[in-house]
Image 1 (cartoon, helix red, strand yellow):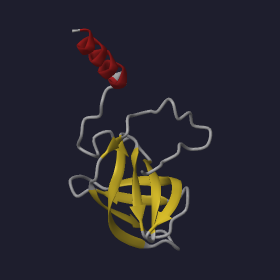
Image 2 (cartoon, helix red, strand yellow):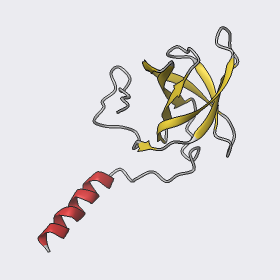
Image 3 (tube, one colour):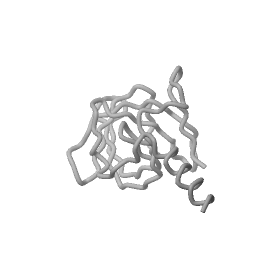
Image 4 (cartoon, one colour):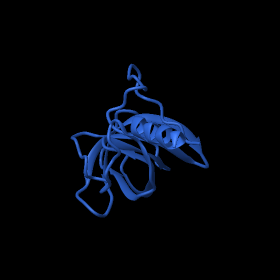
Length: 127
């Protein structure tokens, strides 16, 4: 299972938006030396503020990248998490530099989603 830890000091029990396991083809590029590259990859997890992806290129925390999904304008983001390497690819947490809630073209669950689902299950069991 993939792991994506919150930034240091970030409370993992209170996220700004829900994470959704979703594979979306993307192109990631960097035009700043020494990391000049363009690479096609895919998301592992997305949220309204960024994503967890894998890359073969070496990047560092804080580095600025450009992400495009093919269905919208490219967005600038920064690397907020550098995780383990698997088969020559590194897991990266990226965060958009400016809010982009519609970038992934999906509707995220509401904040009370988990509570609503549990409540519905409890009601169903009572019947």
